[in-house]
Image (cartoon, rainbow, N blue to C red; front, side, top):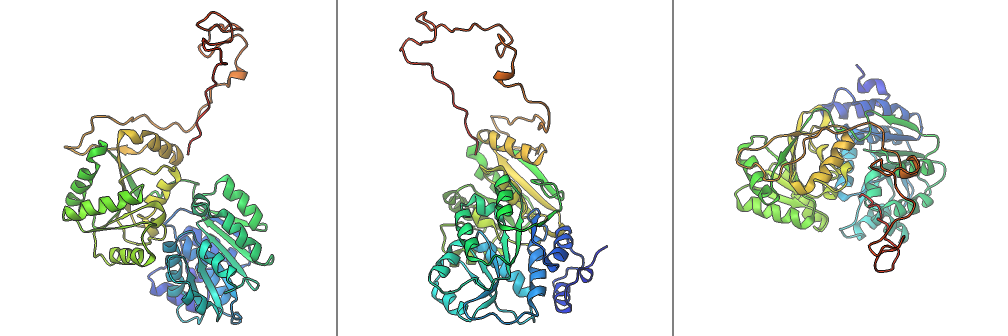
Length: 439
């Protein structure tokens, strides 16, 4: 069994890791840390909750521990994250693991006053954790520069793509030195992310600790079929009768998150909400209350939930299924972290069948359906197993000539209601059906 001592980290880091209660590295840490320490570019694909943040923060702290102090306004390591919550999580990791190393780390993000950030960066920073928009603001104001950058990390690159940050990331890429070490971490690697890696990284070493787009095996995933108008009632029932403790509930919309939180509070269930329309201070306060156990339920949107890192979170609930199937993987990754067991419940109504099928196709698994007594839906969900293989039917151009889809012979000319070939009664050419593009 590999231990942290065998990965080449310095004594101070090893003591800090031990103080946090960790003894053995996770698979992504075991694979990525030696590669980062050797100076290689790395692209790592690992599920949420597998310790990927420590997989890059620990070797970065080791590499910078003996470096010279940064010059004014300069940065030695830039860690780019898509959300403020994730930036705060990464900053916490750096602070805890880097205790006693005398490294200066800063976090900059939008939603707060920029002036203190400008003032702190004037002294320079060994490590800067930033969101793309605020970083570009600071670069535009000449409050900092990236001329002396040694390390660049793109964390959760797939979410940056989803949120439309790639143009901003490319502008940042143009400002960093060509000679640098680049690390890209992502829960999933789509073709677009692969293309981005080819543009940003030089002969990267790839780390993939599990099958892409799969869910953590220790998470028990259950679907509760329910009529849409009874979802709120069912959630209250589950929260009152389940002894799981704190629960993270996902809502598809910001308005829905606030509304659901109010309904739960009115029913005597302590709850709060977190989403992008709230100020940074309000989001930080809500997250802090949840982490301290002051509220039982935190209702969150997908974007705001990135960065919620609670080791002992036993359960997540999908009040609404996400439109993008990959978000399901990110959502349930909030539970079952660091090898702990977890539970993911999804309240699914008949109008969400398409989303459910996309999720099951993505994770290559049919989710277990369980009716809750008293909440059986009028409209049932399909229980057909997910198909993971098989041949596609031939395209029309590949079918034998003279054969229609049904196999019957088709004539070369079609007749309209008016009896003339090739025209409909209005005299306009027939419409062609356009194939819908899925989200």
